Amino acid sequence: MIKLSQVIFSGEKKPIKKAIARPFFIYQKIYDFNLFAYPLINKIPRFHKQVLGKYILEICTLLLVLVIKANKEKGQVRKNLQQKISYNLDCLRILIRLTKDLKFISIKNYLAASEKLNEIGRMLSSWIKI
Image (cartoon, rainbow, N blue to C red; front, side, top):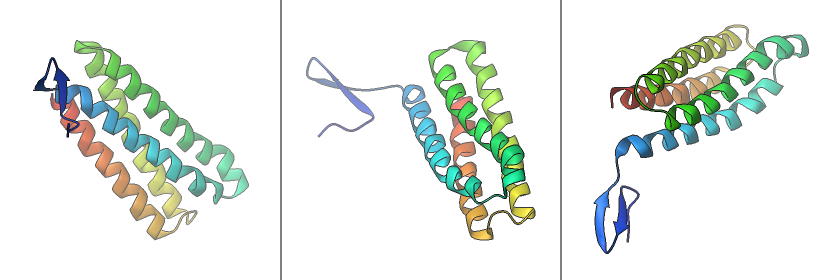
């Protein structure tokens, strides 16, 4: 059985670079967070949904696009995109906390969201170090 960290070339197993595999996992986590965020945004009152909710969803979508772009780039361009991802992730954390403080989402949903964002942040920081 072939593992994800291995690929077959002419009968030999050679490990693939972890830098290639890592962005896919980050992309999947951000995609999962998007799926998690949409129902939360629907619970926000109408006026705030049009401002705060729209901004949260825009950042979520932007994170997906930036990860794809960063995965295709190399060198300093990739580092700059990774920094943009980190900046937007921090903004998203603050906005999710704001929705909790305004009592638009429950503490349980806030804890789940912040746990997902922290996991994405850990994955991103290890990707930046590579």
